[in-house]
Figure 1 (cartoon, chains in turn cyan, red):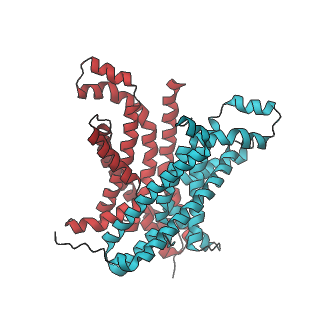
Figure 2: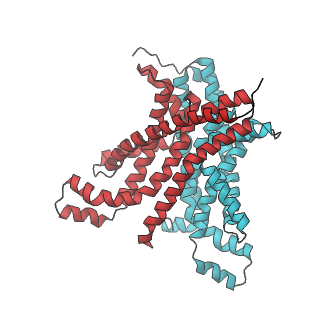
Figure 3: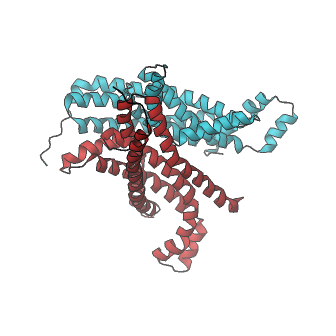
Length: 227
Length: 217
């Protein structure tokens, strides 16, 4: 093997990688939050008594879960702009990812809601709680606690998925890498480096979210186990 | 200058869809074979074997498929192995699916009650007999719904192969878009094509889940 590995591009281009990493983290944090909120709303809507609302959520979830993120991003970025709805690549990425993660979050949270014992809800009804109070006080907190590990995995997958937004030229780590490799022709080395960065990000994110779970759910802390 | 999106474009897209299906099958079959080996080794009592497997799985699951694809596409030629984009994408997707299928199947093996393993041991069954006659038949029932569900992930992830130049339905879609400049229609049709591949699998997975969970109710 005569190939000489050359990582000297790091000396010149590390700021690009650094800001790419920051952009990836920022994108992941924003979409984790927006996807969680949107997913929760959809999950709540899917337990609604209004059939139209339930069916609407079901169609949305099935449509998203059975099509690739790449095509969804193309539809948002190229498709919507051809219909006159023009967004920047970054905004399109945030919209596309939120719609995508919202569907998965909604399914996960809905499973948590369905696992809640009917007696709990009936008890809250008996106490004269309003529907909103039942949802926010009785149903959602234990649902979140129950599905938290699944949500963590989903949001780590989302962070890895942000790499796909480079295909609609959003500025993030993979986009930065492809710019560097087009200038240095060190494709393998560049992608090897950012593979390492993604690994650190995914392990770090998993660890942080697990800690957050311990902070959010005291029962988890006390028992040292999930429900 | 641009042609309108027409039936001919759907036909071209269907031609691309064949490669999407081929790539999905390659990933599932070879990823499944490796995943099965990983699952068997993962429940091994030899500590370093199960540790090595766990590390491999964690590394693959912690990396974006797209980047794995790039690393293989640009890396294998360095090792002196010339690979086309289809091979590189295939290898990356096999690695990806082997890690996930390995995890799913290891969990299925482990969820067969311990008494079954012990019972098989007590009857002095060999490893092959214990696995083939006692554990696997039960584990397969548990593993079927998530496995079929994961096939959907495989099909969807093949779309990333278009990035390194595999002429799958997404790649053809980009070309159709360049010719018609009707991105909304083009990508909507592509989404529908993926949906037609994935939705039956999703439904099947749910049906299996319901059929097999009866005994647990």
